[in-house]
Image (cartoon, rainbow, N blue to C red; front, side, top):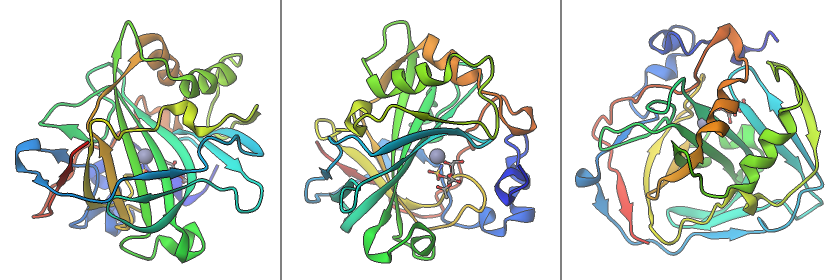
Length: 263
Ligand code: SG7
Ligand code: ZN
């Protein structure tokens, strides 16, 4: 697996900028979200479109840095989000996860200095830019929903995570480069709705090289629960460079505003 994206390790994130200069930029993610320094803002409601329908196909892949779900759709059926800080619809691209080697690390964003156990990223690109690659060239090209989870003994029921882990469980090791078609289910199985408690939003970047500064981040305020056994399953995925986690440490805010949107 010799792609550019495999040429980084979570053991030395401070070195990413040597090969990927943007990783040393001033609009980087993740960040610590300080609730008391966030500015309350009103936006139109977030709207999820088409998430209740199952895709035509669904694939789970270990790309060496995360485990991600990609999908194919019938024409005109790709789900979109709109509203909130977003101008126009953003098309769904993929879902992936960041975790740590114990319950006190793993999320990428931290809230008031506190890190949680896992973060699920639902990645979208602005439909008017046509393709994901083209959208990366624009400061508002990508929208990522970053759902934070904490490990407990009694998890919320997240059927999406359950199915993802069930599909990869039979193998002894679902390692880098491995990929598997799974039986398609609607993305609503990941409990994506976050209208009740609101969210934080700010302008940032991809959290992996090349750290492109094109992301509008939306971080739901409610922390979800995930079963510790499910966290153990994420930790069992072998990653490139024998990394035992795949979260990037928080980056400086550099004067950016973080907006708090009420539920
Ligand atoms: C994960 O995070 C992968 C990447 C993703 C990256 O490592 O899911 O996906 C692919 C297709 O490489 O990179 C360009 C992109 O989506 C960064 O995404 S993130 O900022 O949401 N963590
Ligand atoms: Zn991510």
